[in-house]
Length: 152
Image (cartoon, rainbow, N blue to C red; front, top):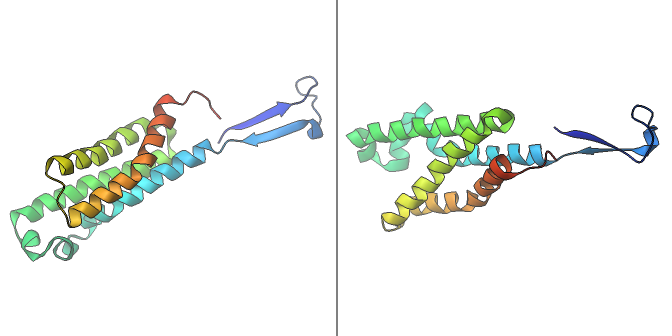
């Protein structure tokens, strides 16, 4: 949190309390909330890393019992990495750039793959819409982490 004291006059250390304005920046909170929103977005597919028995209910019994099930479980573990990175970046400013890159790669990579794959209907369409709905959050985080110049 950034705390800035703005004085309306006087010498440093001698300002009177009624001449000071304390301003707390909301930007760190907005950045943290943005990362937590992206963590929630990725939490559902990441849940399979902890509960692989849900795979059949999400992808059908054939997927859970085939080699595809192994790939889907691996995919879930990769989503868990994205979730953990987003949660960590929400509270650790020093890793926010890595969090933005990892999460952006996941989201934009899926949207490009979805588009190149012909934008199929069904579950993939819902995933694409969810990712697309969170692109503004991702763009805000890209700006806040890489391009914002003010500390307030």
